[in-house]
Length: 330
Picture 1 (tube, rainbow, N blue to C red):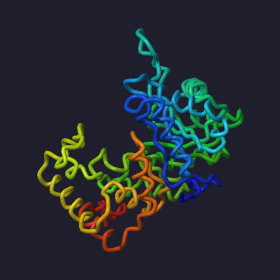
Picture 2 (cartoon, rainbow, N blue to C red):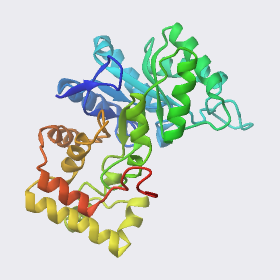
Picture 3 (spheres, helix red, strand yellow):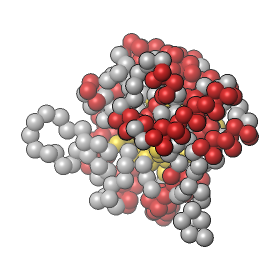
């Protein structure tokens, strides 16, 4: 396993992050526990979840599965850097809209932390991430709530997710004015196909010392050999991934991608992960295995070294936007 520091902190984390979003709705509890066992045995020490994860199995179910895994062997808690998130509405049952059960008000942050700690079966959250910007809550209020939780030992670091670059800057400037560490990580949508984060989000993260944790590293399955799987009668992609493949030009790009990797004799999904590991500012991509085989494939990406010729060819197929402001000005 390869390790790195999380942004400007002294915290050491693995270069692959175990995402748990599938635990519960797609992967049952025993299989989820087995995947966490295998990931930890392989040296993956960075686990990511969110209070709303669980979907059809129920909001909070994923955190409960992680918590039951800790309960089986409490020693695992000190081996893991545990990250979760707050923002989505966690109100249950019929009734009014419960407007204070979501977003990033001090009231909801306090409630959400306590609920996550209970579901996770732990006394602290190592990295507490804001799942989305809250345009209604000022950062002074957010940081006051975070400061209290840090003083109480309930959270250790704060991170963002899906923040634009200017909000990363604003959040950390306000935190610095309060004498606080501020954001130490940004979890953003970034992969070989979706590269808009290179314009502002990743540069801002690097400038402020945030570790970047990309989610959807395989672009919803599109970078995992989707066309090859279609030919073999494998699982068909749905949603936005399927929509992309209905566009002949887009389909041709993914065909060129898979043909290129066939030429080099490398696996598409492993290549997409290995590409992210070459990018500036990247701590490690979030992998979301549903099975042991998917975890094994992700681990192999750590050993894959992409030659310059292949990196150049990948840029030709999926060019990035270029740096700001040159990408849209001069």
